[in-house]
Amino acid sequence: MAASADKRYLILSTILHVAVLIVLIAGYDFTAPLPVLENTNKNDVISAVVLGDSPKSKMLPQKVTPPPARQIVKEEPTPPEAAPQLKNTVKIQKEVLALKAAQKKKVAEQKALAEKKRRELFANDLLADMKTTNEKQKKKKQKELTSHFEKTLREQAEKSLRQQLLNEEIKLQGTQSRQAQGVVDKYKALILQAISEHWIVPTQANKKLYCELMIRVAPGGVVLDVQIIKSSGDPSLDSSARAAVLKSSPLPVPADGAAFEAFRRFVLKVKPENILGPDGGLSV
Image (cartoon, rainbow, N blue to C red; front, side, top):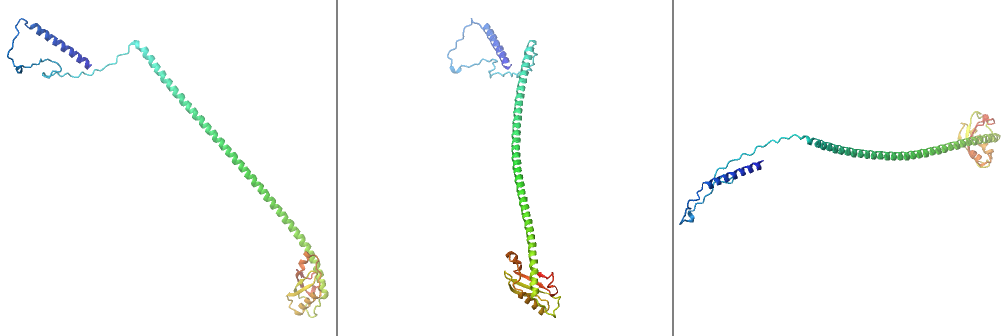
């Protein structure tokens, strides 16, 4: 708008200059003689400047042109014929926005579906790994339990076998002990009978007294040594008992080597009161 105002001012100024020029030309007397100037000095020539109201003139005060006022442009109402086109444009814009929103939603749904599938695959892989690990642990535990069970069975079988062997050994030892005791009882009676045949008890001795003798015998029954380990208190009774054992050599002993070991060295308790009785007091 400022350019438009300047243009109007320029046109108006041109028209005024043309009008002044026409007036001057009309009032000029072309019949008057032209003035002749002689001996004129070039330095005396006065330079003149035609004054005018040109905007670029600096001789006259310029007219300050106020800035054009800002005009408020009012939106003109849309003509009736442009309304359908505007509606179509708005509709197209809405359709484009809706299409973009739908595409964006579809992309988001595809991403969500892909993420869901990824999580499902991860969960399935994790479950498979856990299942495999559990099966391995289960097999390992089952193997350990089987090994432990077999070991326990072996230990129990070995323990039972050892106990059975021990029971049999005890039983055998008991049998052997009873057999040995039977052998001992048998030869005890024979030894007491042999001693009683050679024991001359002093007449003044107390028949209720007893003494204990340690007798060492060689295989075959030969008496090697007789020692009094517990006196009866009567030296004559003790001496008579020792002499009776020596006179009875060789004593009746088992011929079997294992059975003889019980009679290789034994303690004999003798008592005049029952030397000939069944309870002779032989101790081995």
